[in-house]
Image (tube, rainbow, N blue to C red; front, top):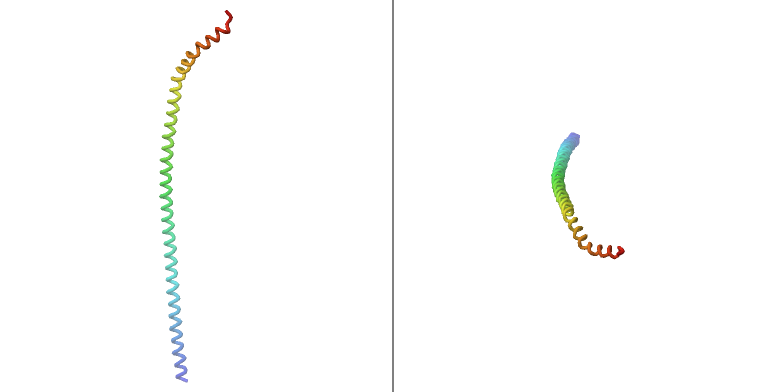
Length: 120
């Protein structure tokens, strides 16, 4: 019976050692999984920060472009206003001359018509 007990005891030691190895392996795998999970979370945050940084840079670039477009539009508006003012000023000078020339050219015809209508 001693050899049977000794064999069972040896088998129990082997099972105990395998169980302890299994428990340590499980703890090791769990710690590696936790470390990987933390690393993935950190990488996710880093990627999110980079994306936000890129979005902020693009937003700033768009803002600068919009400001430049607004300045260009203001310059165009100023040029258009000046062109309108110049046109109005020129019309104020030229239109009376044109009207005078028109009246001078039509005056003889109107005089002739008036003379025909007036009885002599």
